[in-house]
Length: 146
Image (cartoon, rainbow, N blue to C red):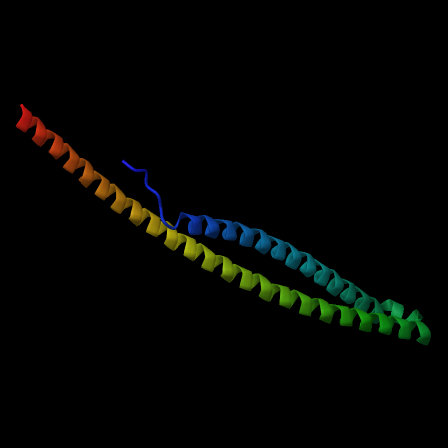
C-alpha cells in the first residue's frame, strides 16, 4: 500500500512556520512594550517626587531663579511623559494587532490539521476496503484453484 500523503502538507508546514515567526515577533513587541511601560512609570515617579519636593518644605528656601528652573524641569518631564504615553499606546495597539494575527494563523493551521485528520481517515478507510477486496480476490482464486 501507498503511504498516506496529505495534499496540503506544504501549506500546513508553512502555516506552522508563520505561527512560529509571529510568536517571536509578538514576544519582541511585548518585551518592547514592557520596557517602555517601565520608562513611563519611572518618569511618572520622578515627576511626583519633584512635585512633592516643590510643594514641600524646600519651597521656602528656593529663590525665583531656582524655582523657574525647577518649573521648567517639571514641564520637560510632563512633555516626556506625554510622548512616552503615546509611544506605549501605539505599542499596545501593535501588540493587540499581532495577537489577532497570531490567532488567525492558529485558526488556519487548526483547520488544516482537521482536514489532514479527515483525509487520513478517508485514506485509511479506502486502504482497508482495498485490502479486504484484495484478500477476497486471493481467497476466491484459492477456492477456484483448490
